[in-house]
Length: 404
Ligand code: ASP
Image (cartoon, rainbow, N blue to C red; front, side, top):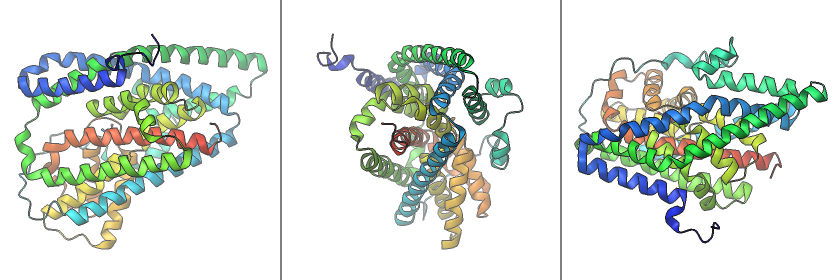
């Protein structure tokens, strides 16, 4: 059957959307007992995590050998960094304006929840970020899923493969491209499970969420969602359209399996295989760019998280009645940026990193407990924005590199 004549419900994005809606309904109707379906969500996420490392390594080696010399890779890295910084800063800016206009924390009576033990892990990790890029043991980096180390090692492999004699180079490139195709096939298979996975993940979130805690935080949630929406539906599509000429709606449709999975899993790392598959296979962005920009982006480019760090810190200050001066707001702006770079692509990572921002402006650390109750829902929203920004970045950088 051709693409055109297929009934709408055979389209993957509709199937995933139906999975999402049915999951929400099941969670609402059955409450906590719906957790009986959670193993389905766990299987989906485990399958995705299973392919991350082999997919990223093979894709990057193939991509790097395709790009050619180290200078060109350096230039690509520079452009990626420029894109990451520009969009993260634009996103924080929107959040900062919104939180100052709406002032969601002023006069809010929010119950303070105790922050669970162990949540502070990783807060001090920003300083070591640069050094950690070089893995002292690449196999260990792969085993630990240390993405920056994996990216660095794969780049080294790719760059030096290009310097091998032709026949040896052919062997290495042949092996890695075959391996990459193999991993893409596995990912294609996992994508088909997305409707079921998304259904189970959503059912669990809704079934176990206590909606009653949302009340005092509604204004805060609204501020976050409105600003994330502005960035996702206005800033990024505009940048995509103006720079690449692509239709943002079409692009988002190609990306929908990844975006909806990001939403339901709240993990941009776990979503990475789907992001790579959608950006390359469905949206047609060349592998040389996406193999590099997407894994790096999933690790350091988090527009949604950056915005959240800023809005949350300002909200906490407002609830405590602490005035944040203009110069302190600039400090919040930059620490929010740093915190988003240091945050891992896993659920709740952004919540943990708020401590960095609070510490920088001398706000009480336990303030994180104010927003704990609604973190999951907002995490889902900011993770989709994180993945959307990475994907838009891949198309934009491909255009900057004249690759499409
Ligand atoms: N969950 C987000 C992600 O994976 C990170 C965060 O908590 O903000 O992208």
